[in-house]
Amino acid sequence: MSGRTRVRACPERTCVGCRERAAKADLLRIVAIKGECVPDPRGTLPGRGAYVHPALVCLDQAVRRRAFTRALRAPGALDTKALRRYVEQTTVAEQATP
Image 1 (tube, helix red, strand yellow):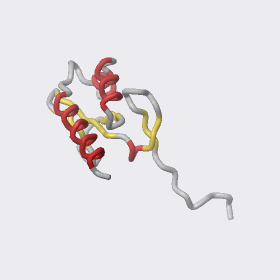
Image 2 (cartoon, rainbow, N blue to C red):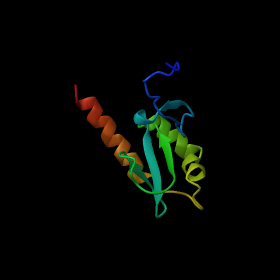
Image 3 (spheres, one colour):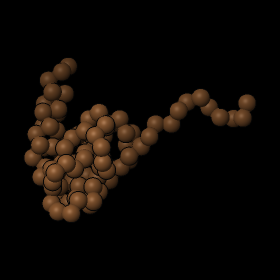
Image 4 (cartoon, rainbow, N blue to C red):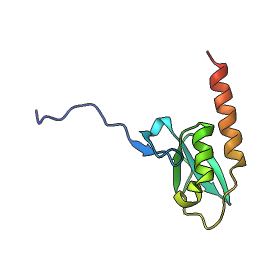
């Protein structure tokens, strides 16, 4: 054998909110569509993506630091209302399921 293992490496991405590296599967992909930040949980929407933990703390940090505008290379400010609504719904759903 050549010393290689059969285990595949898990891709990592950096959260634009807290700047911590995490597995790609643990982060939520965000894309900019018509001046709005849109969540992309399946990771299939076209365009440049940014990653954030699906938690309000990281989302608030990213909005305060204007990280989405910079990471997505958007020309102006992006609307994050739909993104906030999505994160709030997923955190409530996760807390409700035992």
